[in-house]
Image (cartoon, rainbow over the protein chains, first blue to last red):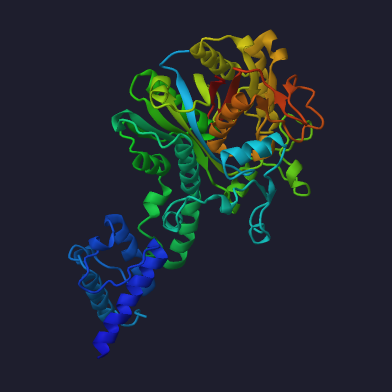
Amino acid sequence: MADVLREQELIELVKNAAEEALDMDLGDATPQTPLRSLGLDSLDQLELVSALEERLEVCIPDSYLNRVETVGDLIGALADLQASRPDVSR
Amino acid sequence: MSADDVVVTGLGIVSPVGGDARSTMKALLDGESGVTLLPPDQRERTPVHLYAPVDDGALTQVARRERLRHDRSVHLALQAGREAWQDAGAPAAEPSRVASVVATGMGGLTILLGLHERYLAKGPVGLPAHTVTGIMANASSALLAVEIGARAAAVSLASACASGSDAIAHAVRLFRDDEIDLAVAGGTEAIVHPVTLAAFGALRALSTRHDDPSRASRPFDRDRDGFVLGEGAAILVLERRRHAQGRGARILARVAGAGSTCDGSHLVAPDPTGHWNAEAIGKALRAAGIGPRDISCVSAHATATVQGDRAENEALKKAFGGALSDICVTALKSSFGHTIGASGALAAAVAAMSVRDQAVPPTRNLDHPDPAIDLDVVRETPRPLPAGAAVLVNAAGFGGHNTALVIAGE
């Protein structure tokens, strides 16, 4: 249950970051939704990553980014990074 | 008249006195000032508190998403560029024959200053992905190229206060070299920030007439004390006459000639003899195939510094000789302040409206003309122009850049 909430919180965080940094409404995006299908080009995706890095105070390494295609991939990367740095996650 | 003339078919302006071309021209003819005081919370860190801002409410065609990731100079260029494109009737053209030429004196300086504060507070994680694209000086020309489908060229020029005129002069060369049939060309600048005000203040270039903002910008006046930093953008849609006529476009004016030189003498101080500025004017007249007596009005660079005003006075005397006594002069910076990389394009756009409307805007704040200046400066009320009149737009910039444009009525 905690994991599900965690995922929902992260989805909300991504949606909030997209709204604030890109003025984009990700609406009904689910973990399975490809980022490109939301209209995010490569620069938009990096902008979203920057906004998430700032909010979570983490640095998302290129090795993660290269594997990110869906909203779920992005959330998974954020969850991994938070798990490895619990002292700075919020 | 030639089928290869470069004609103006659209105008867009955002300025300290108006949110579009029409309202800007009306405000200029009414002698309004766009100069005001910085908000109180920004005065602490700069000894200069005067500026001439663009009203945020003017940016009606700039989406929030664009405001989040681009520098303010780009916001102004997009607003002016979209107005100009619509004014021209959103022309269809062969993309390989279309160019975007948009100049800026200092590019994305203000976005960098803001992001630098975030970097100092948060480190690298504070820098968003748009940091590089926000700073780059070619962003305005590139974004407008994307928007209008320009494939012949997207160029950004930087020649300080001559940048806007140089963009138009460069576009004219692209027409002359038969590279293009259509271009958006102009300039943009938005560098007002306590750091830039303090920096220009360190050069002793800015007015500090804080007790009387609307009277602070005083070109050619005995009591001037420097310029006022302003924001703005002006974009012109330029078109080969054959192309414009082929689509039945309305033609506002003609860019009859352009000429550029460099003083080659000092990084910032103008050559006091005005020699090379006069040469630039001579080149523009020759390119237009006209002589000094064919010019009815000079839209002067006239920033309201003693050195600049006097050097320009010498340049005009050299370039026009005896014809100067029959030429009126106006100094738009008395209303706009100095919009740096936008100023030449603003002056060219206003000149196009002046020859169309047959009216030259007056120069504000010229209460006691500098005795060293012997020009017929338009004051108080607009000066009528004859039909088909030609206006010489003069520009000079830090770096010794001189560029003159001849804007003629139809």
